[in-house]
Amino acid sequence: MMDFSLHYPTGLTEPTKDGNVDVRIELADGRAFSVTFFTLTNLETLMARWGRTGECASGLYVWATNMIVVQAISQAVIRKVAQGLVETGDIEKSGWLIRSSD
Image (cartoon, rainbow, N blue to C red; front, side, top):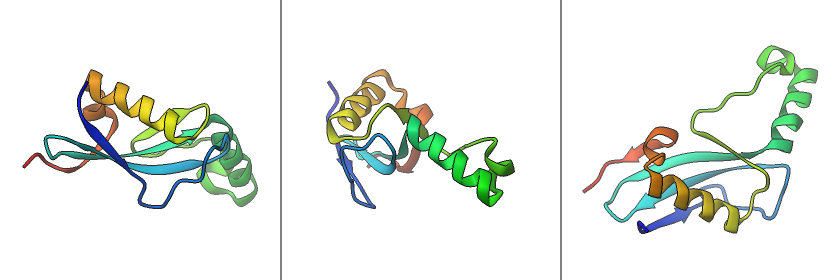
């Protein structure tokens, strides 16, 4: 298991099934990646809101750089997903590299 730490630049409200949160995943080798976790319900909420405001072709689509979709947002879920991303190397494809290794 690779060592990593999680940081929540905008804070973490948990648990929630309708939300999104920015997470910085810092690896032991000094690299850091940024990802945003979204819940399925939050994607529906955003699409409905944007349907009223006209954003994203009136809510026809949602996109975000480094989007990770989960069923619920909690520290436990985020830690488990982050561990999987780090262990498989998928963090390098799904996350935005914000700091290179030392």
